Length: 247
Image 1: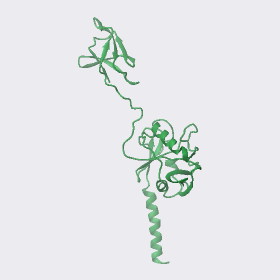
Image 2: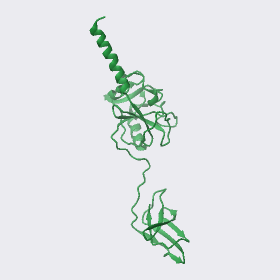
Image 3: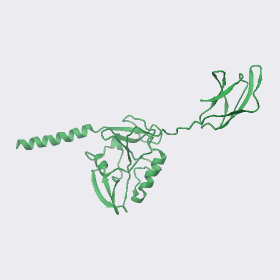
């Protein structure tokens, strides 16, 4: 056998092996945190919903396995609805991010260096054809992720969508409340002190978010938790109060 042919053959095989060995995928939760490989798909904050390609730095949407979920793996869309899907996904904050986009044809191709797509990190592919952002007139490119096969086809077709984003380190923390500045506290009636007890109610200048409370303060020490919600809080039969603060 020709020596040059053997060396060329071995080089190709070795290159393919290294390419696959270097591929590293990381599961990402709905809240943006890193997960173990054993993590399962779901809608809870710590459930798996996205996968990061640690080589390219791209983070990919993982299709849900839930017929009620608009991101269900069995749902497909026409080209005219692709942007609607993208807008809704960003509005709902997927994996603590709102900068998702449609991948390019090349990005979809690079995701599958050796077909089929890795099911451990991307789930089952019920519908293998996915839209890319590459378009021209009435046509757009789609990619079969089970074979890494591209096709230029009509926008009238119906195919699946798999969103992608750059891992820029900037995420939108889910359900982060905005804590208002309490500029005024009105006590009504004026605190009534009798011995070691006090009757006291307060109206804040702004409402605190759900899950946050206020405490009475005595001097520099944080005192007793007040009861109430929104702007209105009260306490009774507690040591004399000199102020109020949010925490």
